[in-house]
Length: 549
Image (cartoon, rainbow, N blue to C red; front, side, top):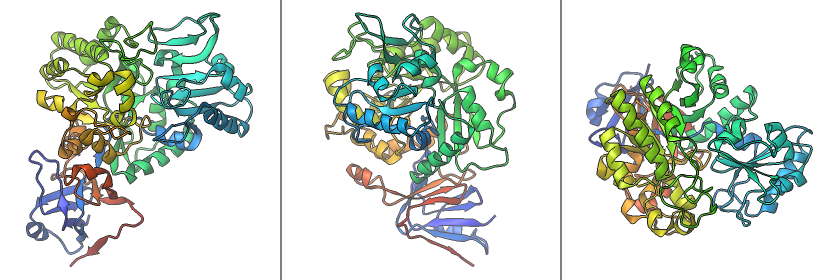
């Protein structure tokens, strides 16, 4: 296996000392040595190669700490994208309905039409489409429009019928079927994962062929942004079966951490596919996934105090997806069986439920290094971060919300005071809680450099600074997507930093991101290296890679 020397640029290792050596020497898929260029040149062999960075920056490839790979590929290829500015251009209900109608006209009668990334807070009308509006699009196709958050949607009459929902159907725990307050007729709105059922799964309507088509499209997108380790954070049994269909000896071109739905245990690991996993070594079964609440855009994130401008007077603090007793039992079950848990908790009251459940589980089954993780944690309070540090809990923040929905947090969801603290990464640092940051693709696209910008500069789409006191430095934002992201899923010995024996996964950047933090978004990924091989190069990138003797 030939070695390659990377030199003549800035090298950000993300090791414990945040060292910046002169050179890196790789051999095959692994990092062989890090240090002075002259010392590493002395270790090169006749067939070694050189990679002249030409003043660019080399850092570990990015790791996605929380997302839903390959859902972005499904959106691009098979679904109607209804995203509003700044992600898309769908700003009025009529535009959304026209796009659904166009898709229905091109779809065989009886087949589903699915719209995605619809945001009621960004659309002019400020609401989800109604059953009547979707029936007017087509009564020959089941039509399902899922919200950008993935936590609710709107269905036409045929889709409700396919879901088995009628006006006599009771609301499930943690979910609601929208009803006209006067007549009780279904409005088409379906809120909460329990109510959506399979219609809320990212693999809804995806067969094996479509899965791999979407996989390839999503992989190429991630690699173009320097991401070589992705995550599917809600892996249903169907999704796991799709991943497991890849032969064990085939390299899919990207590595994936899979988080099975928590309710699949213990059957998953004792009777089903988990009994003979890993199969393909590039797909790893990781933490098990739980939920406590919903999304801020829908005001279903569960808060301890009412929303600044409550949309639903009957539920001014949001929606809880489960009871404390049920959550306690689920956490105890998974914790006692040795699993790590990632739990979706957007609101502070939702987070409190999980913190309490973990504390109870640790009393019965003490475990020093569990790394149970709160996902999102956007409204975490200082007293909760202090408890988390004591209990060994970690968190993955969602600072992209600052840019995409920060203005609505300020004036509608949380109000001026609480919105200053969304994704409180600086507070987590003060209390010693190790954290990561994520995009939650496809809620927002996987863009690690823009995500770092959101955490560092905390600017909304209108350029308002939201939470000066919660800004973190660039190095912290990069560590949160490299070594911390590896650590959060027990992979810190394999990846996440440039150190000997770790995998040779790198991102080559156009500039040093540590300089001029307000210019972070000017930084481009010029090349992505995976297992020592180039897997993406920007079209206008000039490289110097030559054989030496």
